[in-house]
Length: 54
Image (cartoon, rainbow, N blue to C red; front, side, top):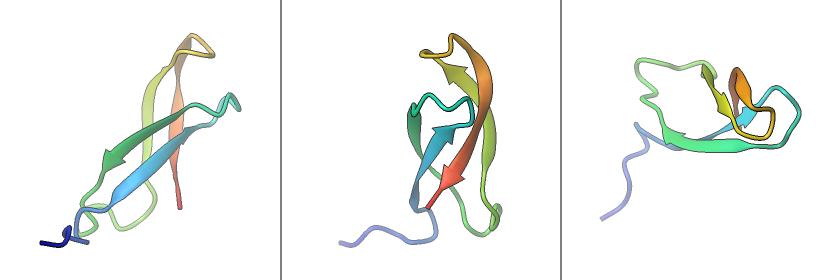
């Protein structure tokens, strides 16, 4: 059984420039553009924006 492409796996990379990433799934129907989430970056030791990369 193949994975559903409606909810693809995306990488969220830190905008602090540390190279830290999170991996999550997103719903393409609800969020067609790139995701931006505020999450904790343990390298920078603070909350920063994480942007979706392709």
